[in-house]
Every structure is written in structure tokens, then in C-alpha cells.
Length: 178
Image (cartoon, rainbow, N blue to C red; front, side):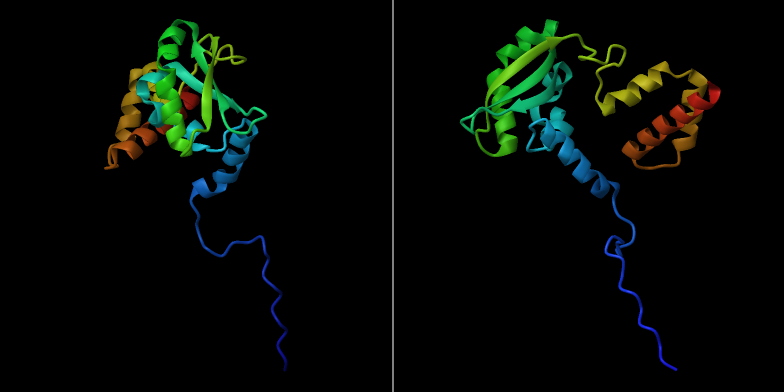
């Protein structure tokens, strides 16, 4: 009795077991950032680490525009009108820090776009970074929900993971309540 040969493996199936979620998000994030001119996605994803917490609270990178010459791009930052003069004074520092991320003098100019703190089209959406969203959710939640979320996440030793689980529990409990 002869055995039938096995079919060739499916080329789209991966045989490495579980993969990190960041591996699945790497390409979509890269494509989205490149469509805005950001060759280094880390500039968008780690903006507070690049320019510092004080400047990151006042500014958001919007796009990078390249001139015809190739080098010497223009970084466009979104800034609230009240903070624009302070940010304007720190432009050389911003250029220096952004160029350090790129590894060469990629940015020669910074253009400030003054707008309300909510952004361009997001009229009701607050202009927050993910690390601030958990703090704002904790302030908006009822005290009993916050306490229940803390109880749920209390056994977790890692403080960052515990904070993320508390925020998740608050979101779930708030949704069930509504």
C-alpha cells in the first residue's frame, strides 16, 4: 500500500506559534506614517520621548514635507495658539532632537500650525496621548467603578500592566453600567 504525498504547506500560514501583536501592527503603522512623510515612525509613536514631556504636551507632529532639493524637509507641528510663542522659542531644540532621531540633518525647518487644543476636525475629541487617556478615564469614572477595577487588577505585580488592566476594567464596567 503506497502513501499519498502530503500537500505542500500553505505559504501564508506561519509555523512559529504565537507572535507579538507589534509584529502585526508594524506594517500598517509604517504605511500610515510614510503617507504623512514620516520616514521614521518612531517620531510619531514616541513623540514625548523625542522632544520631552513639556513640549509634547503642547505640540503634535502632523506631517513632514520634502522640498524639491531632497534634504532639508519641513516638519509641521500642531500647537495651541496660546503655546505657539513658547514653542517658537524652542524650535532649534526641536529640530536638533528630531534630527537626532533621523541620524542626519533631515529637518531644516519647523512650521507651526496654530489651532484649538482639540485638533482640526475632531471637534469634540480631546487631544490626548494614550498614557493620559487612562488618567482621564479614571477621573471620569464613578468611585465605585474605580474601586472595583483596582480590586480586579490588584494581584498583578507589574505596575504598568496593573494600570492597563485597571483602565480596561473601568472601560468594561462603565460600558456595562451604561
